[in-house]
Structure formats: structure tokens, C-alpha cells
Length: 250
Image (cartoon, rainbow, N blue to C red; front, side, top):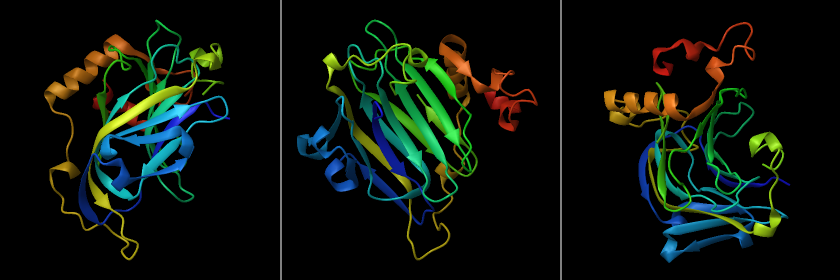
């Protein structure tokens, strides 16, 4: 049993640009844990709860290639040790690709850890971890994945989730509840009849961080980053991965 709350967004080749906003009834399917998920406020809010036996998950009805996805999330409050709340993109098929936000809970009074990772062709090992500099449990905060042909930008479990598994989930605090709202999608929708995307290039296809955004990333890295795979020389004795040598990681 995995102590996690999951949002799975399936990502494949795209064909038409779609803009979707904030109705979970229209745009999402609950994929597991149906009685532990609730859509409220006319489709504007979705909650997932985790109990000792299992959690819950949902995914977009459409599949996408390239675009921007925003999601507002309010994380589990109080003693959230042993829980993982996720927001991620995942491909189908044998060549697994994935872009992850994972929020690792902690005991009361200690900060959440944001764990990010990117998988390509079934290989991950691109973890970065940050202590959040705000309380993600008292209000909704927006988390964004911007994915195009040039770059990926991620902005703004009991055995491993909290302090390497040293702190276990306290099930007397269950159910653990995470809430999602105000999602926005600007992306290309997959059409099975086509083998390529016909989305116009547009600004999203080449968008990156401006100078202010790069400075903000450097500030977060210098103040709140607690692990960076690019700095883990023991893990990569033959040399760090290629992307670690690029200037955007400085």
C-alpha cells in the first residue's frame, strides 16, 4: 500500500491546442479510490483523502503533447509524515517519460519537502529537493509545469516519504486530505488518427524563464535547496549528466 495522494496526467503526442479551465467534472476522471475523492462547488474543487487502506487518484480525460499546466493545491495540514501529494505528467507505452512534483509530508512544525524529478526513456535520477519557504497547507498555491520541445520548467510514501522513512505515518490522524482547484491547461490534444502535432509554434513552444524568473530560481536554489543530483558527485563517479553542465543550473 502506497501512502500517497496522486494526480496522474497522461501525456502523448498532440494535435489541437486546447485551453481548459477549472471544471473537474468535465475534464477529469477519478481512476482509483472513488469513495476517497470528492468533487465539490459545481466542479471547481476536488479533494483526495488518504486512509490506512489506500488513497485516491485522478487524471485528465485528454492526453497532451507540449503546453502549460497550472494547478492550485492545498496540502495535508498538521502531522503529514509518511504522505506524498503529487502533481505529475506521465506518458503511456514502453518508453516511460514523466515530469514530477511530489510534496513529501512531515511531522507537525517541520516544513514540507518539494521533490522534483524528470524521467526520459524510462530513466529518472534527476531529483532535486527543496524545503518550502511558505506554508502550503493554509492556502492554495499555484504550481506550474511548462513543457515544450526545448525545455521543461517546474515553477513556483511511508517507506521513503519523510526523512528517508525514519518518520512513519500516524494513522490516528487519518484521513489525510489534499485539495486541488483552479487548474488551467494550454496544450495540444492527442488525436489517434494523426502521427504528428499540428499545433502552431506560438510563444509557448519556445517559452523559457526571463531574467527575473532565472534570478528567482537562483534565490530558491541558494536558500532552500537541500538536494541536487547535479551536485552529487558520489552518485555519478563517471561525471554528472549532460544537462547539469548547462548554464541554467548555475
